[in-house]
Amino acid sequence: MSTLAAAAIGEYWENEHFTQNADAPSGDGGIRKQLFDSYAASVDWTDEDHVARALRVFESLLRRLDRESRKYGGDGLPADTVAELREAFARDGCCLDGELRLHTARVARLTIHVDALTEASGIHAELERVRRFGAEYPDDAIGAAKQLIEATAKLVLLKRELPVDERQDLPALIKQAQQALHLHPAALPPARDGAASPDNADSIKRILGALTSAAIGVAELRNRYGTGHGRLAAPTGLGPRHARFAVGTASTWCELMLDTLADPDAPWRKAAVTAPPATGILTTST
Image (cartoon, rainbow, N blue to C red):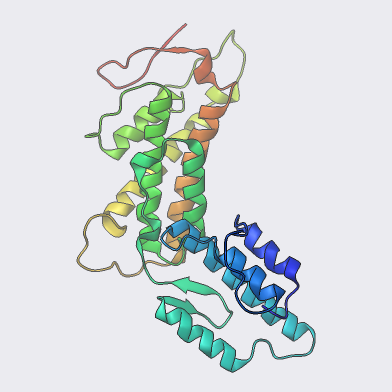
């Protein structure tokens, strides 16, 4: 760190929402090392999120040092330094690749705790996490995508003060959540006063029908290829494109649901929802 500007060291730590630990001992070394150590002392190494953010700081700083060396005519970080770093990271289950990017050992990093996601902000944060790490662990990503759909559906029902049947399978849960927000193609809100509205257009019905099928498809994909079923062997043939496909589908469905839930002008706010009849279709009173 001694070759970097102190402001750059602080910037990389603070970009990941770390602050200096005022109680950290000053230790040996110059101002830059002491500055680095004061931020590092604020990392809770038992917290998975803290660790992930700290590793991003390490990666960014190493790549910055390498770029600056090359910018001023050097060959990047010295080979013996990189070798020493690789050995040190490997002892902690990390891999430093040829582009100085850090990869962690396979852990339950993409496991989603559905019951803990009771706010939209938490689901958005998990979506970002899965987008970041999903391509590296595609089967984890597929499992996490399914769990985020489940968490979003349950959050919608919770916010609409509707019951959640824990025994329900995911397709039924998806349907119930979409009905609760008037986003199911079979239960879109009627046009008011004969006025055309994009919310009940035929094109919206077709898109919603396809999106419903796509969300259910993610659940089916998880059943065959994703994590969560105690597989005895890892699935073969999965790659980053499968992860991006599953996560992208889940993201589209979740974000539509959360955006509609938060929209003050969404049609569901303008209609009184009655208890669902035996068919499971929510009806509206006019």
